[in-house]
Image (cartoon, rainbow, N blue to C red; front, side, top):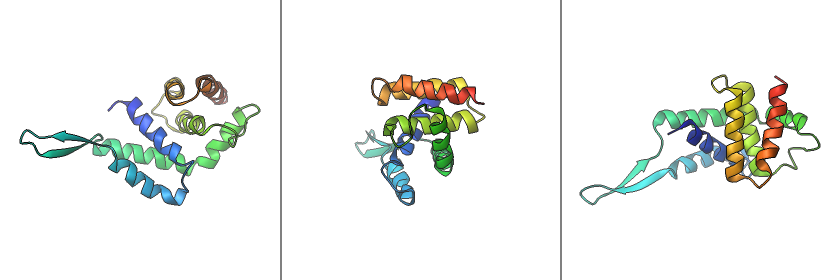
Length: 148
């Protein structure tokens, strides 16, 4: 699985935070990983369930999600400071999840170059957001990047 695909799964988990209490998220994580199996048929006709993640990938996704969830208030504060005239309560849920993930990567994940984190966030915004999402996300992340 590519880093972009892994990032997309992390985004989907961060997005769930908007609809579930933090205390419900362990159950949501379990459900998410139960749903990532692909049905295939063996040569003898038996049904097989193939997991889309390796154990390492699943561990990485869970670990990064946990790190983002633990810093949610801090990430939201950073987003608020860098989004002129916007408060996280007014930002669309998709854009907010993308921003939380990307701000975390820009500021706290030394393995990911800042430019890559921003580019990947813009791509997620193009795929999942509204027409103006990619510009909005890019603008806020550019402001965050300038502040470091």
